[in-house]
Length: 389
Image 1: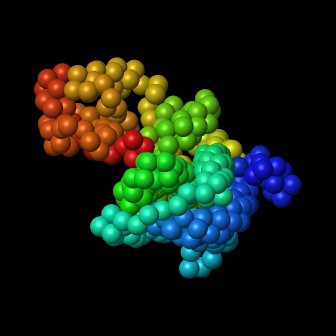
Image 2: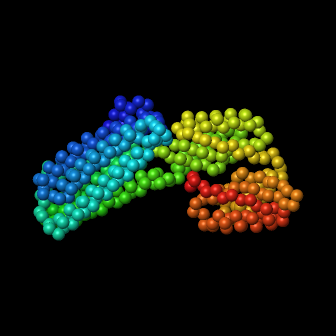
Image 3: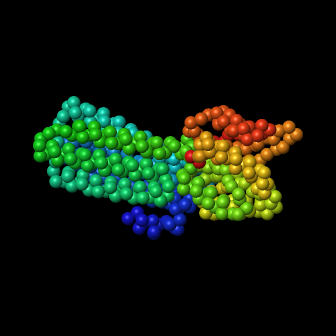
C-alpha cells in the first residue's frame, strides 16, 4: 500500500537520494503510521476492557504512544527538509536523527511503565477473559504490525533513515509483544493459568530492548560515526576515474543529516602537470560528486614527484618497511629534501583509530628502518587518523 501511495503522491519517487523525495517518504510513512496506530489503540483498548487484561490494555496504550512516535517522525522529516538559514548554514537534516532518538526514548518509557504494571499484576493476579472478539482483535493487530514493520524497514533502507529504522524496530517489538499477549490470553482460557502479568513483563523487556537498539542507531550519527563503506568506495571510484589523479587520502565525511553531506579530501596530482588544467579537473570532480552523490566536496591538490626515479624507488622501500609493521598501513605525501649532510624523508602515515601501537611507536619503528637504509636518511613523519573506518 505504501509503495502504491508513493507512486501517486511522491514526485520522482524512485530518486531516493534526493532530500525532497526522502522528506516525502518520511511524511507519507508517518501519516500511515498515525492512522494504523490510532485504529489499533481503539481496538485493543476495547479488547482490554472486555478481557480485564493488563497486558492487552498496556499494549493498547503502547500503540497510542506509537501514534505519537509517528507524528514526531512526520514533524521531524518536515523540519529536516527546511532550507539552510543564517543560524543553520548546513541545513536542518540532523533533526531527523533527533526525532529518531525521541522515538527511542518514548519506546523506553513505555517499556518501563509496562514492566511496572506487569509486576503489580504478578503480585495481585486477576482472572482474564478470552472471547472470539478479543482474539480476533489481537490477531488483526499482529498482522497490521507485521505489515508496518515491513514497510518501515523497507522505506528506512531505501532512504537510509535512522528514524524510519527506529520506527520499524518499534513495530517489530509491538508485533512480538502482542503475540505474547495473545498466547497468554489463550493459555489463561484453556488452562486457567494466570500468566498475564508474566507475559506483560516479557513484553516490557522486548520493548526496552527495541528502545535501546533504536537509540544506539540514532545516537551514533549524532556523535559522528564513520561513513558507510559503500559511500567511501563510490567517492574513491569517482575521484580516481580521472587519469590526472594519482591517489587520494585524508578523506573526511561531514554528516549534517541524510542528503546533507560535505566531504573533503586530498588528491595527489603530478607536480610537473599544468596547474590550470589540474585545477579544472578538480572542479569537474567536485561537480560530479555533487551530481551523483548529492554532497558538497572540497578537494585539496597535493603535487607529487611521480617522474623522479630516485623518489619513486625510495618510496617503494619505505612502503615495504611500513608493511613489515602492518599491511593495512599506508603512506602518502612522500617527498625527499636533500641537504649537504643528510636527506630528510618526509611523508604521512594513515593509521586506524584502534591500531594496537601508539603514534610514537610507529614513528620510532619507521625512523629506525629508514636510518638503516642509509645513515644519511632522517625520517620526518606525520601520523594521520583514518576517519573512514
